[in-house]
Length: 177
Ligand code: GDP
Image (tube, rainbow, N blue to C red; front, side):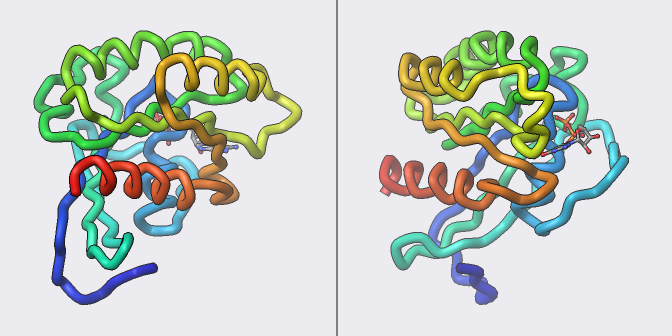
C-alpha cells in the first residue's frame, strides 16, 4: 500500500481531535510510523505528520494534524480546522466522560470545519477490555444518528488503526474526486 515515489495526486488534510489522553498522538504515530511510544508527551503546538498511500490508483498524501496538547486549554483554533477534509474524533473506551464530550467535539467541527468534512468516530484503547466503560452499541447509535463513521482501535496493539484511516481516506477520496 505504501508508495515511495513522490508523485502525489492529492494531499488530504485530516485533523485528530478529542479529549486529552484518549490516545490521539499514539494513533497518529501508529499510522504514520507504525510506532507506539510509551511516555512520549512531546511538544506543545500544532504539528502534523504524513503518510503517503495509494487509493484507487491515486497517490494520496495524508497530512494528519495533532493538537499536541492544546485541547487541554481549549485553544484549538479555526486555523487547525481550515482546509481539513477529514477528522478522527477520538474517545477512550475506558473513560465515559471522553465519550460524553464527543457531541461537543462534533459541534466544534460543525462550527469551524467545512460542511463536507468526513468524520470518523474512534473508540480507542480497545485492548483494555476489562476496563471498558463505553458499550460499543452506544457509540454505534451515536455515530448512526450523527452520520459519522465508527471504529474501535488500539494504538497499543495497532488493531484497526490502518483500516480506520484507510476507510476515512477512501471516503474523502469519494467526496473530493
Ligand atoms: P492524547 O493526549 O490524546 O494525544 O493521548 P496520548 O496519545 O498521549 O495517550 C495518552 C495515554 O494513553 C498514554 O499513556 C498512552 O500510552 C496511552 N494510550 C494511547 N493509546 C492507547 C491504547 O490504544 N491502549 C492503551 N492501553 N493505552 C493507550
